[in-house]
Image (tube, rainbow, N blue to C red; front, side):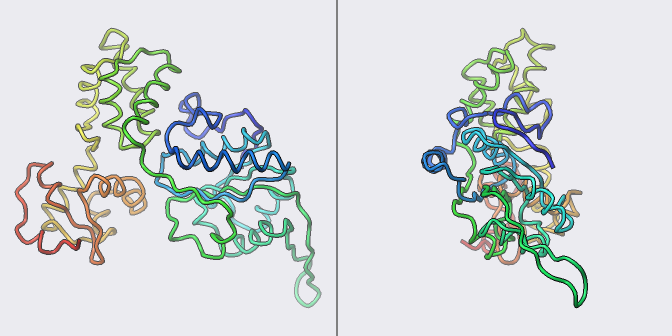
Length: 338
């Protein structure tokens, strides 16, 4: 568990720390989400109250952790952060909540992985700002209610369907992240390149944005790698030629598909006749975990229209065959469920 104060930066990705926005006006993309959130933040500040509990939903790398830090910065309050797997026992949660100050932003990542006993303790803390603590054992056991200062819980998840209804209902604000638009991705490229001190051509920024899966974490990683290529193999400037050569070396194609993306598509096409195939079977076939397949690879492949999820499993679409240059399974189209 980490404790930070306003204006400090949560260091999740090591070198990525310097690229993280600190204020809402620096957070690029997700315009509708930011517009509403700015109103809620200003209203809470005007009333000198804690912001209502905030639920963040979306695929990895879209800025959920960063936004939680930004909210704390905008409110000018302490920021505490942990992840659900790190909370093994109720006393772990109690230890954090008994140290919060008024209006603290408390961020729990992967909140869908909370254990039931911890989740039940969280219900009372979110609603009544009290902790239920059992003292003693057996017949002599009694419950003690400990008051805690009003705080803002920010829960983030990539799997909203796995979060229980009672927990979801206790969040007053829900923000759904979507993959970023190309123009927003280009703006992120220009901002990150500026922070890193490397010039970038406009056509190079557009190509980088198109190959970054609509994900800021990915585009920031690519900007750093292209800076390396430009410094060692180029003239110190990220040009379109540098990006094209860098993509070739990193095995990224013009749509942003990485080697494992293509491996997944080829496996469905060649081993399973275009599908349907279950997630666990597919994960074993490509040597990845089911979580990585479902959280990282699959959302982008669905968004690009290459995979369709059906009740019977994953299936390739005609667009996937065309992109890979493979001959279509004549029976596959008949099995697609539109």
